[in-house]
Image (cartoon, rainbow, N blue to C red; front, top):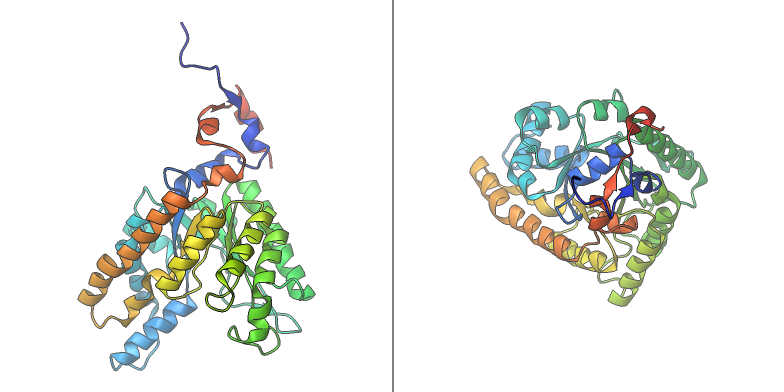
Length: 356
């Protein structure tokens, strides 16, 4: 008598050879939908949330900065309203992480992603941002508290060598730490204005797509999921040019990639998401496009109604698209679902784990 059907079994080395070690694989399973796509919600913003909460207080006649406790409660409110509709939720260590876990605001079946970077950047001699890790925080602590993944943001401009070199060195260091602790790494790279530019200037917008694509070419191998900007601007470039840009982004991305929202209005984000999924994206990691109007509501009842109605419908609409049109993360690694179900470890594998 035998148990099971071993005819199609594969050794676990086929996963490890692609960097899919047990912790990383479990992280991918935890943050993804059943079909391997990703509908993730970003609630790791600090400065923008403090700013939006401050504006809400001033509209209510209170000219002050929100307290730490008020920012925590706002973030928990957003989590309670939206987390159950996401496959994973990204939170920050300063305001969100411990309170989210302790309060159960992120349900146990939803993946937990934790931000690593400090929101205040050091600047190069040419005033280009250089990322650092949040003081008192790091990969080991995120793993210790039970995170399924960590996220690192590096503002990256390949033509600015001092900033690019510093950010690249940090990315490499964090990637190595994540391998050591066997935890999933999401890497986000965003373009930034140079020498007094703004993000609305033609000089910035003219090179944005090239920067987004080149950043993915350089950096995407140093992560497990790559979080990308939309490579262009709706209404500025033709749909054909934007589609070509997205296909170029997909071609150079060495890992599954998801689209960030960058605070654009939801209707624009929905168009971006549809185009990105058509070009090969595995899903989204979006934030303010879903929920930024929360802070414009005048009272608690209105905020609750907004989250339960408009914001949740937005997330559900994107989730439906992601599940239907997204590329499963395992497909980017060259697998189909049946391949994963057939993988078996050899006896004694735990003696060699971890290999880092």
